[in-house]
Length: 598
Image 1 (tube, one colour):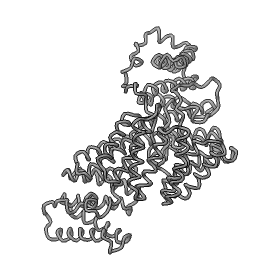
Image 2: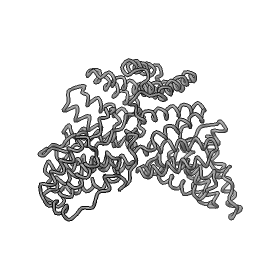
Image 3: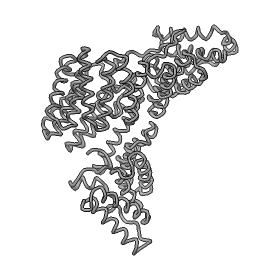
């Protein structure tokens, strides 16, 4: 579930069944599956989900005791025709969960209840949908998300669309939102957003577009769009949420404060730091008015991040220190919230050239992450380790940075809903292996990251295009030239769509693709691409720019050779491929628009 604004309290897993006659379209939190929400993050990167308990093993269909039920007998099938059996079994399933007897027996009751309602036909569509929701929720509590998906799809299909009554609208809304949660836990973010959007449409048709419960769903969907970096869509939904809450809530309400924090996150991701700061200040004032001291401290951290982005370092330090004082006094010196502020201070001091202070704060944070207080989630620890790794990498300590990324990967790789985050870690590790000349390990990391991003529905994002390009560079170093050409072509198509043909990232891919074509003997294709790249760079950078001069020399060499020898041997890529690693090693410049921060 998206949860970028407010940290959930993490209630125990439970399954609820709507009471008979409940016809209200409820806010998302009241009708969701028992899937833990994700934790808030200070950046628009994919945030972390609650990890299943350590003793919950991965299950496959038929592997659990619940899945090994005896086949129904003729007597059982005949009993299902009793119209009173379905409601009785559904109540038994609910009571079994409430009594703590375990989900296996409850699952058996819920499955039998669903079969009983199916036999009753269209007249029991609502009851069937309810029993399927309960069944899917039990599957999710067992970690069997794949099995929950077809159950929820049946639940959605069971509710008639024409002339929906209020109770039918509730069932359809609940089904789509629960299905979206389940897709999200499986890393299928695009399908998740599609389900949330359908649920929102149903809710607006039933309640009207200005209802406060619609605002909650709009914000929920906006958070999901932020996860996949669709910030324009997120901004529209968040604006709608803010307008509804301003109309129906008192001034400086907690709802408005949550809306403004999300809006600040969106503006920060879009680079509008002044607008982000304005929303954060208003959110802080609302939290102060409501006596939310911890939330005020969390907002102070976000304000410090924004000051840091604006280069207002003294004000950033003041905001961080304010938050640090509150966290230490309320949560204790060894809480992960204290460690997170240490990480922010380490980043600030690195950017201001105070490397000793930066490393000291990193070490203080690592001490807390090494011995976290009870109840600390693995996702919080992994997020902190990733941020510290980035600082160590920037301080030219790649070995230490890699160790921290590997620890973060171990914490997250088995968690459902974490595929995008794990893919990001693997991609960053791929870059670091590449910079160290460990091209085989680099290629393996990129391959794993690309596979996860494809599966999670991010194969159309600019980030995915950049990772594919980096994998192509690793292929070049391993002399897999044909595979490199395919990857560069895929990266080109994605970045042309997402960033435009004149964007620096896209131009970098063009250059790499031209070099690969030349190595494959496709000189005419290489010349055509380089002519376009040279034209755009001259327009944007001027004719005297060193990058323009490099492109001009490469094109001149290709033209000369193409006019003299048509069937020449493929040339080594060492002198043609614009690999950013060479530039870094020469100390001239960083990776230019082709990869990750180094």
